[in-house]
Image 1 (cartoon, rainbow, N blue to C red):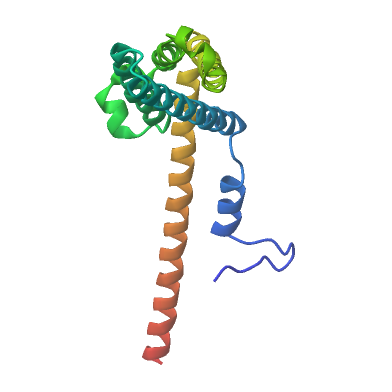
Image 2: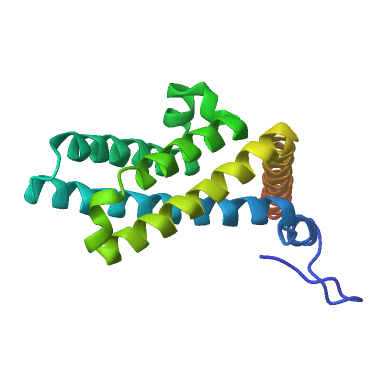
Length: 196
């Protein structure tokens, strides 16, 4: 039951505060989330490329060790994808991934693993092209993460996230207080009618 202000036509009370606070998304956090999403997609591409290379390696009996190496690359690339989700369990499990430099080094490692052993794939141009695209893109993301980590941009992101969370909590608290006050007023009005 939001009421509009008679003079301005804008929502009054908690609705005005909520609309002012919740409509502003921090552009820095939006860019960080988009970059994290792109990095996840590239890591998924690395997973796909490494799975295809492992299948070809095992099927064509090129090299058993290359197939095993590709399986490890798949597992670590999946870990990169999970790290980009910033899932609490993963970050608690591996504290180094809380820091952007650590994430960047892991991504560079996966990129190097994805690019390794390309010599026998000369006849498989499609897989070689996918390997190059995936590895160099993840390498670029890893370098951006390492440079950003050195510049402490990850700490800035964490601080802004905390600010956003506390802002959301303040909006919820204000809304809860407003609802409580409205209910108290309705209760007093109802008691006043019952007393008369």
